[in-house]
Amino acid sequence: MDQRAIERGVPGAVLMENAGIAATEAIVARFGDRLNEVVLVGGGGQNGGDAWVIARQLIVRGFAPRAVVVSSDASQIGGDARPNLEALRSLVGEVDGASLLEVAPEDFGAVDLRGSLLVDGLFGTGLDRPVEGAYAEVVRRLDAAPCPLVSLDLPSGIDADTGQVLGVAPHAALTVTFGAHKRGLQQYPAVAHAGEVVLGTIGVAPPRDAVCALIEDDDLARVIAPRAGDAHKGTAGHVFVVAGSPGTAGAALLCARGAMRGGAGLVTLATRSPSIDQRLWEIMSAPLGDPADAVAMVDDRATAVVVGPGLGTDDDGLELSRALALESERPMVLDADALTAFAGDLAELKDAAGARVLTPHPGEAARLLGVATADVQVDRFAVAERIAQKSGQVVVLKGARTVVADGERLRVSPAGTPAMGVGGSGDVLAGLCGAMLCEGRSPFDAAWAAVHLHGRAGERAAVGDRGLFARELADALPGTLATLR
Image (cartoon, rainbow, N blue to C red; front, side, top):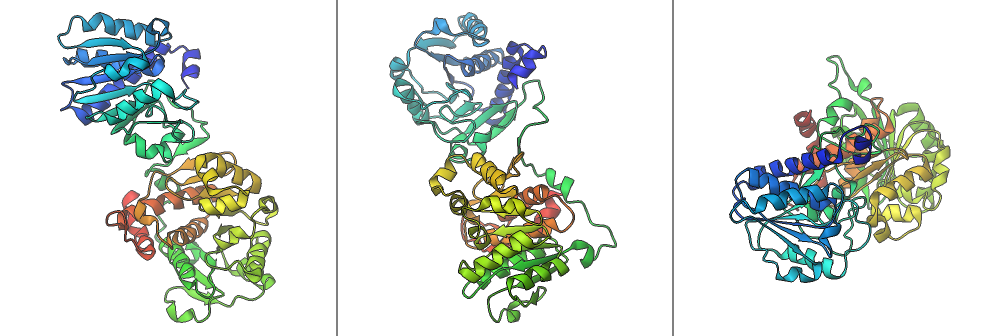
């Protein structure tokens, strides 16, 4: 983005100045009562240059910051950081209390970090290897400082693409990221290190063709329009839920509830769980015959289908899942046990008769790819893309900061709460996604809209960070949508 702007005639120094001003404004807005003794720590790269702009801007505003250059050889600092460092050097001598100190990383332990606020400009988005040795100790000292920390672009030591910690990283109270949001800041563990994330504009627009985008609340109104005054159950669509077996009827019921609360006009539950009719009110039921009968039934009656929650992974359950997933012409959500039917055989889904949305949690994603769950969590964007490309379908990789992929595009939702980490919340999401497929949306739009609405409904329904029932999450969907839209 920087390079493109520079090629079009915007000087890099202007971009750095804009970044520093944006960060200064964010710092003043959040920590206006803590500007009397700000300590700025910058490295030898361009992230340090942003810090020197901020220090100068604080001086202009009447404050006396202390700047610390951490570099083995400060004379080698180049790029746009160099003139900003020299400009700061010329100013500090004219302001009582302001200072500029140059230290090698090995000597950083002697630096006094006591102050009202600390700014981290050590490493930026270019970091591509673990922080080790003396620099690791510098980062640890930043993390242990007795005052709030503000990080520039991202906390030093965070991988900008994946959100992983490259050796060590501090915990910021505020991160001002420049130009566009970074993928890494939307995944854990980076989320826990970044604190509040504020986007600072640098004077150029982010590319409109970006592969990855952050879902915002306003986006829902674009894909979920108000219904016409003469809408009825037929126009709202009919979701068939093929789910549940002995002992897992709750998964089927929650999925159906998610579809109904998500806006489906009709919901029919076809299940392997006996005697479920007595637990249904607004939801209809249908007999579940052999796989061929099931395919014919949903193709004849359904607008969209959800297959898998609690359906079972015995031979009969897997056969049913495979038949529906490969042969039905209806758009379909494949969740839970239906995903197990394609572990190691994802490419088969490229030949499915209709569009599919896969909704794996990390463990299921690992089984689909034949890797460990820990490997999935290392780079969730890459895993979602890989599953989408191998299957030829839309993928919802669930978890904190859920990722949606279709092989060409990525979306990530910041919505959600730890209280949603209970059995049944994924079943509600599958049903909601089925409802979103009913009104003619593309599978990709249906998937990301369902994910974001689901996360916001969880926030609305939760009291604290635990104790949420999945049915409460489902029941919060209509009110949440009305509020957001």
